[in-house]
Picture 1 (cartoon, rainbow over the protein chains, first blue to last red):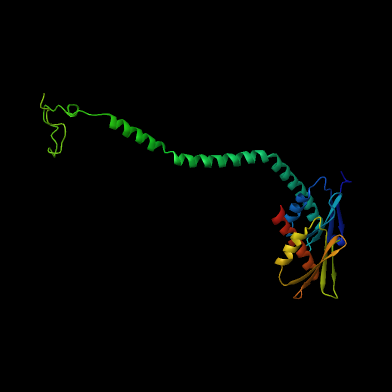
Picture 2 (cartoon, rainbow over the protein chains, first blue to last red):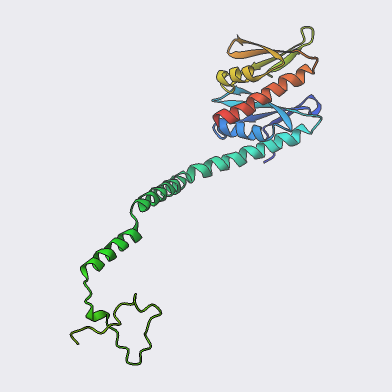
Amino acid sequence: MPGLKNVEIMEQGKKAIVNVNPKVFALEVIYSAAYVLLDKAYFLIDGDPEKEIKVEIISKQGKEVEKIALEFNNELVNYSVYVVQAARNQAVREAIISRALATNLNTETEEEYCEECAEEEALEKKASEIKINDDDLYIKDPDGIAEPWTPEKAKGLKKPKNE
Amino acid sequence: MGFFVVEGKGVAVLELNPAFYPEKVIDLAISKTKNLEIKKSMQGKKIRLELKAKEKVNLKELALEFSNYLLSSMKNSKL
């Protein structure tokens, strides 16, 4: 498309004016495109925000202004894609963030409810219900090998009296 | 388009469209700028800034650097 040119070069290649259609590129896209090239050129924005935006580009230290103007055009497309993609992914991003926050909330409730503590309590309750007779503790030891090192502290080695 | 230098007065003039350069951003940039005298006024529908440096500098570069500074502060504050 040889006729499609929005760049005017002036002052022997030191200055360029890029005409931007605001219906194609939003103002925030124009700001972003200019922002990334601030180190290469000076930018002044003027015109009608409804009809046509004029971006004046003045080169810094003799840099090729036409190249910068074309780079600016590329950045316009680049940021437009970014804005469109960001709008498309907005729902997904929000879902991820809400999921992450919900996970965080669940962790807090888990801290309040201690599963191990509950199990321990249940076991203690069961243990208190069970009564062990002395007879059950008696161990038959015909060869006398179960004699403890401290017989006075050992339990269940003495034969019950009623046997 | 939006800037010129008055050599006799040692002043650089920037004429900015408030549709692209919000007044709040301009005021904030003026308040943060040191070593520079800046007079703000309205010139029709545009905001006119007269910049005068306390030291000897290139006035054209001064005006253009200030306009770039406005753009960068706008990016940080608005976008």
